Structure formats: C-alpha cells, structure tokens
Length: 292
Image (cartoon, rainbow, N blue to C red; front, side, top):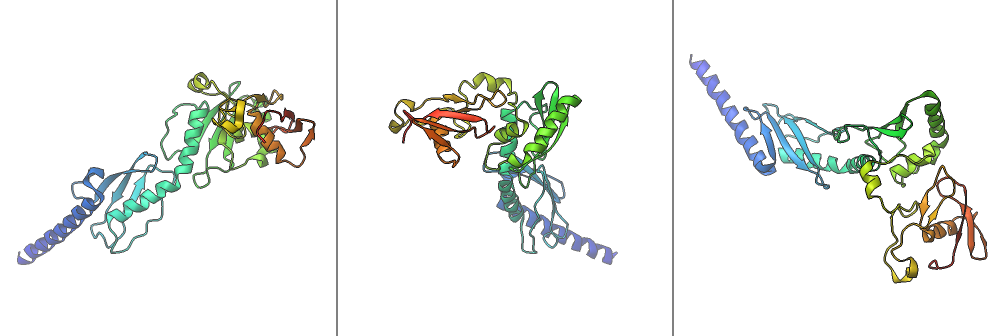
C-alpha cells in the first residue's frame, strides 16, 4: 500500500511540473492566441496571423515528457516545416518557426488569390489554404485544372484539360508548344493567356468594374500623373494589338519604350516597327507626343 501511495505522489508531482511548464509557455505565446486545449494540456491550438492578415491555426500535440521530446504539429498549409527542437525549446519557438514558414508561402497564396480574383474559378472559390488546385473556366464547356507548386508558385504549373476532345486537344497542343514562353516575372494571367493563345473569361464582378484595361507591359490601367508625360499624364491604354487572338492593350508610351529595348525594332520617320510582346505579330506605333 505504501509503495502504491508513493508512486501516486510521484505521478502527481510530475503532472504538476508538466502543467506549470505548459501554463508558463502558453503565457509566453499569449492566452489571446490560444484557440482551444485538451483537459490534460497535451493538445493545444494556437491562432497565428501572417504578414497579410490571414489567420492560421496550428495544432500542437505535446508528449507527457515535454520538453524532452519534440511535439507533433499540424496546420492547414500545403506542406509543413521541419521543426527545430531541443530540450531547452519552448512553445513560443514552435510558433515563431510556424510564422516564418507562413512567410515562405506568401507568394503561393498571392498567386492563388490572383487566380481567384481574375479568372472564373469553379466553386468552391474560397478553398482551404492547403489546396493548390484551381479549376478554371476556359469557355466552350472547357476547363483547365491547374496545380500550383507551393515551393515554386511562379513556375509553370501542372495542368489537365477537361472538355470536348477537339477543343481540348487544341488547347493541349498550344500548352505544350508554348510552355517555354512561361516567364516567372510575369503575372500568372498573362502567362496563362500567352500559352493558351486566347483571352480567358473574367468573373462577372471583374468585368463590371474593369472599366479600364490593364497595359500589357506596365500592368497598370492608367499612366501616372506626371507633368513630363504632358497630354498622356493619367491616361489609359491607347494601343491594341491587331491580332484577334491576342488583342492585348498597351499604353503607347510603354510600347515605345519596350520596342526601343529590342534590337530587331526598326524606325521609319516617327514610327517604330516591331513585334507584339505577347503574340509576336507586327506592331507599329508613333513616337510623337511620347516622352523622350
């Protein structure tokens, strides 16, 4: 009996030490960030905000020997980080590592936000932060399933076309033929339309509010308000590619600057002759009234 009581006392002492340690570490993270916890404090959930204000919940499962062994973690993200842990580590270290991991994923989520905002995405539009796929409407009852790489979101995504055979085969051929034209520094929508050689339908709310068309070079609807631009200050796009499969709009001043940077551009009097940055069809733009 005495042996049994002694063992019970030791267990209570160990448990008390564990509880005190965990309570202290929760205090460091902040009780306001604690979402929920299990009765024995081995299961904890913390709310973490990233730099864009997105809310993420991280689940932490503690071993009873904490902090001797590292905790197990889970979260609604495309992939988890490798936890760095030692016997001196605390819960705040887990949260800090998770927050750094979230910053590495900002480009991934920004890319998905850009797709959701500028393209017709099949519902559910507001998908889990861990989901890297988007099914986009192309038109003519055709869709493309895009898989964005979480570790390299600006790279060429994997894709799968869905729809009637003839049109899907055409789109698949274009994708394969133009895949090398994907440029990481360009906007996702620009790259996608370049590869598919077509303009994709936009969501109804974007079409309604899109009174000014973005320039295909500077990506802004209007030029900045600047006295040096004279009559073009604050104006919208004023040049459109004649290729019906392209129809990309530009500010003539942006197009002139771009053409001047290309060695194959020719000039005759006040006109520059070159190729469209998107479809390579011939373009010609006047230099007069453009800032020099």
